[in-house]
Image 1 (cartoon, rainbow, N blue to C red):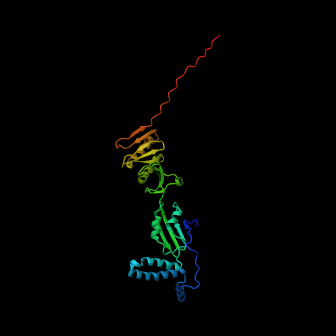
Image 2: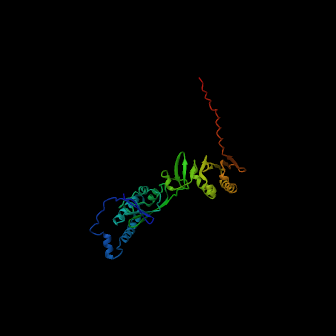
Image 3: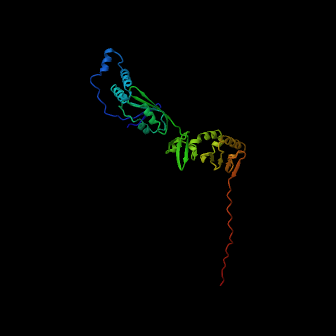
Length: 304
């Protein structure tokens, strides 16, 4: 299959031909002869539109008479009639793709050049596209005489989630979008633990309002899927209270501006109790004991 090409934000998906190109019949169709005699709608798109209106009216009458038995045959006949008028898929254009693998899109569409344009299911294609991890929403349109247009709304990488020794890129809703090539998305916050993928975004937004804290924070650690610890680059852990993260983070910002709290050599800042702040200092390593001085050995020489 041909590689996709991009022009002005729109990509053209390379699609293979479903069958060898058929020769045009020497004699024009009856519809074209009828139109030429009456000098109306000589353009192919106009012929197609008129034919669709005629067939659509006939099909609706048949469907009203026997909806259960004619549904599938009507769909197949409608697609075949469109193919006879030249309404076949010749191009697939994609807009909004940045991280979604192109081969996933091609597999979800499952079309070849020359397939009936009217037989292509827009809803089916949209549903298959939205099963791709990167795709949040997909919009699929059919443009006469032979183009399919795909517009993607992709999920945005938000953070790296670490859980049970594995790493994954997630969006703000906690949806995993990638598990390899993590370094290609630039610096992202690290969130750790079960439930961190689903609950990290609101906490991250609170921390971002305190620049001094944000620049010192290395990871957001979810504890028992109930509350949070903040691990700083210095090794200090800030133990946040469950359900009162906003007040605790604002207090941390105030204390740092007043007393440079975040720059102190602390093992932990425990904020879980509402009426007190507990600081745990980093234990200092004792100086190694001095080695005892050994007396220099005296060398005696016997005089003979």
